Image (cartoon, rainbow over all chains, first blue to last red; front, side, top):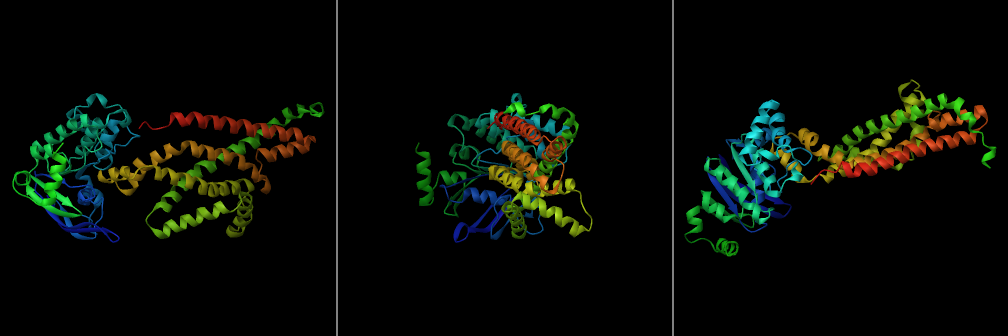
Length: 242
Length: 221
C-alpha cells in the first residue's frame, strides 16, 4: 500500500531524513516513534506530499508521490490525515467540516455527504455536536471529528501525526479508542505516536527513528520483547518509566 | 459669531448636495469592493512562490503606496485619455483611480489576514485533496477576511474621507457639490460646515460599527 524507499530530505545543509525505507502493507498498522526532532512527523507528511523530499521514491497504492505527472490533490483525497492540532476549519460548523471535502473534492451531493458525515459523527460518538463549531468542542472531541472528517473521504489508508500529543491526558483515551476500533476494522494506518499502549494493542510493526534515520523497523513483539538497539532502549525506558 | 451665519440656504441646495453625497458613497463602495477584490489577488500574488508574480505585485503595491493619492488621481485623469485616445469623465476616472490605489492598501491588509491563518489549516485543506484554489477559497480567504473585517472597514473610513480629493479633477462629490452650492448662494462657510458634518457623521457611525463588529465577527476558538 505504502512503499517508502531511500527517501532523503534536507533543509539546506540540515538533513531531516536520511535514506528512509519501509513499507506498509494493506491492513497493517505501523507505529512510528522516536525523540522529538527525529524526523518522524516529517516522514509521515512525505507520504501524502505535504512535505516534499529531494530523493528517493514513495509509492502509495502504486502512485508515485511528488512525481511530475502525479495529480497530488487526487492522491491526497484518498489518503486520510489527522493532525496534532486537529486543524478543523474554525469558521465552519462540525457538519460543514465533515461534508466540504466530500462535496468539493468527491463531488458527492449535499444529502449524500451529510448522510455520510452524520454516520461517521455518530460513530465517533459526537452526533449531538453536529451543529456546533470546532471552538465549542473539547480537544478530544475535535480530534474525533477530525478523524471522522478524514474518514468521510473513504481513504485507502490513514496517517496520524501525533494525534494525542496536544490533548489533555483525560482526553487521550477517547481518541485512542476510535483509532483502535479503526485498526480492528482493518484500516491501513501509519501513526506517529508515543502511546506505547496503543502500539502494544494494535500495531503490527513499530518503527523507531532518531536523527532522521529509521533505526528500528521491527514487529511489535520484537520491538517490545527481544534485544534492540541502544537508542531505542533508552527512548523506551524514558517514555515507559512513568 | 454664528449670528452672521445663514443656514436657510441649505434646504434649497439639498437636492444638489444629495447628488454629491450619492457620488461620494458610490465612489467609496466601488473603490472598496473593487479594491478588496483586486487587493486580494495582489496579496495572493505577493505570497505566491512564483518570484516574478510576487515581485510584480510587490512593485505595484509599493509604488502606489509611495505616491500621494492626489497625484495618482491627477495623473490617471490626464494619462488615460492619452493612452486610450478617449476622454473619460472625471467621475469614471476617479472610480478607476481609487480602485487601483486602494487595492494596494487593501492588499496589505489581506496579506496580513492570509498570514494570520495557520499553516496547519492549509495543510488540512491540502490533505483533504483540495487544489490550491479550493484551499484558498474555502479555507484561507474566508478566515483571513473575517479576521480582517475591522481593519478593512477602518481602511474604508479613510477611503471615504479621501474621496474628497477628487475635487482636484472636478468630479462632483460631496465636497465639490458643497463648493458649488456655496458659490451659488454666496454662502461658502455654511456649505463647507454642512459637508464637514456629513463626513463626520458617516465616519463616526462607521467607526462605531467597527467597534461593535470586532466583538461579533471573531471566530470562536
